[in-house]
Image 1 (tube, rainbow, N blue to C red):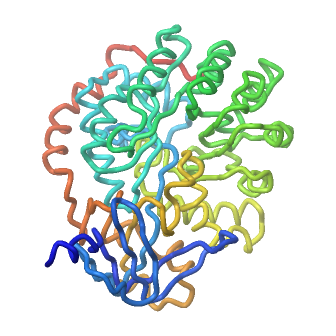
Image 2 (cartoon, one colour; image 1 turned 60 degrees about the vertical axis):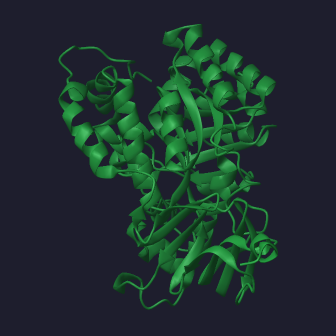
Length: 452
């Protein structure tokens, strides 16, 4: 190849696929026999038919759908180490008797191994970006960088840690923002209004505004929390956040199943970019009586992104399942089979999820100029055939295991189901060796008390 020819070559071309795209009105559509051209980590073109230029790497994606990579908008990646440790329990017992006692044992190595296994699971499930809210986040950042994934990361803190907890969260955010060649962004991560007091929440709002940081927080996780907050403080968790000034910042609320009718005008008055992350499997598992009010939030212009929460409650980091359950639970809650449609569910899984983590201009759609975070989904299996409605097939028939290839910033992290950046067997061996010490609860300690 001549030097001139080599210079014109794309880094990657994906050909013969069906591409999921968004039109000018953000409606989901599909381009048949599409070719996607990637150069310098970004999508250069999405065309119908061949590209007509050479490429350093080529993927023939015949029989596959190219989609924007999925975004897990709220998780605690290292908690995969606790998958299945506390089952069939109400949330108070789950926290106080199992999760928070075990988390008092966490060592940096446990966090590292959990993050490695979580990143592997997400890559295999077509997640290209995740928002994480946990401890020892420098370790999670290092694993994320090595894995090739994109993430928004926040160091969690409680007011019980004193001012030092908030300062560590800020220090982490400032040191790690825009690292890993820009793939890591950061947030401030107060745990929740019931573990972080009003003065810490107000200080967080000031710091977020001063440094241009997202705030990622659990809020109105369930109706019991909202009612307990009203009884104790005369305000809902949403009203507490508003009074602290957090609605004048960019804010990602985890869960929101306890959002009440009285909260909607408060949310409507927000001047910051507000988003909610919904993880429906956990709500069903904990038998919470309400779910994230997706329709009401969307009518306010609030993006609702898809999430899994940690695998200790969800048992997996499968955003495909979250997408299907979001559609089904909303139909059930609204008593209307027309809500939420498959195309709407795909919109939540793509553009809305990207906006929720503050990356709405960079990822979430297959369009020129966007980062090349792309997944290829194989629809040739018996459970996805025949295809009468491609959107419905993707939402209700396809599974995480149908993802064949996962690409972030134009780099292939998994090709034909082979992970290229992480060694899962080695991680699992070392994790299992450390498990007895990690899950020991005989010390009687907790990192916090769940008492909303």
